[in-house]
Image 1: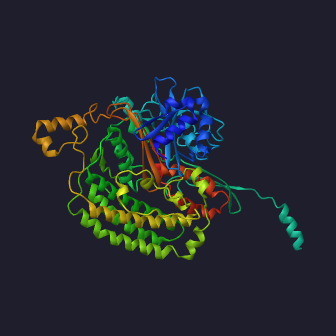
Image 2: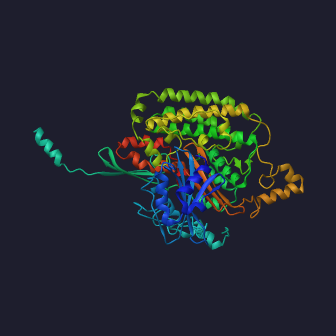
Image 3: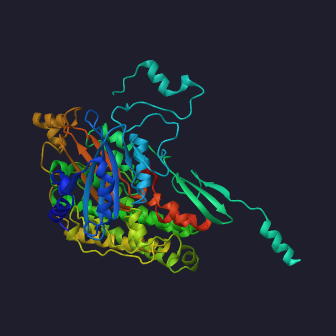
Length: 177
Length: 402
């Protein structure tokens, strides 16, 4: 299905979000409010006209000053019909998004990763814990307010003076922000 | 007596054993840990721990300029780094709305396909070595060396290539490049044939690979499989054909598809794909046009060195592209660009808010979805089957953990 046909279908099916559905550089993009997310994604997957059976990618974007702060970005793909869609859902720091791991099993790990790196919570997730970083890690490194140069050694050095990071701090080497 | 023994066996207390394989285990290439709960030799519950190679790819790219991001993509799938370079640069070029001259596009196709051959050779070799075939491994490594010689010729490095630039390539290939590729193609083909004779009809591998780690069509889609693994499950999904990029629609190639979705089919799909990749390389070499490899755009491409040292305009141009805060100015926007990497769909979702650094650079690693499904694939299998299953998904730590 071409992008234009898909856009028309999407607008017919979801008249409430019709105006947010645009074609941007050859990609269909639609923005959906958080409270309608679960139902919309379920429809996109199960409706044979859309047939988005594959959960291609999931990520979060941190827009520091904006309200709501985060965007959940889903990239869905239909193997049968060979079309793609990008769904964006705004979410604040205190809200939690419904998990999609019941619909697409691979969402389990993707959501764990985003919980790990951005601190976005997913309600109903079977195993919501850190995946890439270690459990005692503090903070969420991909947030824009997490400093690039910040270090969190997992094992404290027995000889702190020999550790290069302490020396750097003492010598006041400027490494940029 | 026998009856008594039977009864005793019934009440014999047994319990499941927890076995952790990895993070550094000789048969787990890459660092990843499989926590298996065993009932005898059967894995009743398996879970996979990853993250041992996490190095903050996204955070690093967000804090560097557009061209500096390329070196981080080398380290994603380090066996076929050129394909990652190409994927990242295509995404940025789409944001900039520029198109490469034909020679640059053809060279990108040639090197992508050669990288795919190298990657598949490595995967097949590691997979058969882990099940006991040291000879086949060494043969395949020999062929990979032929491919990497070509890679070295094009960019000077074998593994961390850093070969593309936004808007083109690092440099044109040397004059004897085409002959060198033509010379090595038959050598690589010979090794693939040898590998095929050693492994494909070998009873040992047939018994170990067939009906192991099966993923049906629906399961493969639900778990987000792409690349050789989804094709082994019988779905002809290939980004090169379904969402064409570069000029793949100009080439004639077939997409090998498996039927059972087991480890053996994944092996076979990779073996057939290597031949298809070589066919694409041959077609591209025959059609390789002359001309520049980078776009003629002073806002994107670095000037010739003779210009930099010979004229003030060239010097200023170089300065403007290199200095912090100047650099390539990408207009605000967002893009998702997918390329068919060796393991599947490698996607770059890049957001620019203007300026010389990306605001966000998400990489969709194909290995991530495959490794997520590992838990499902190993559950219910024998402990000895974990190794071939793990080998068949070709997990690459650099790309999985980023």
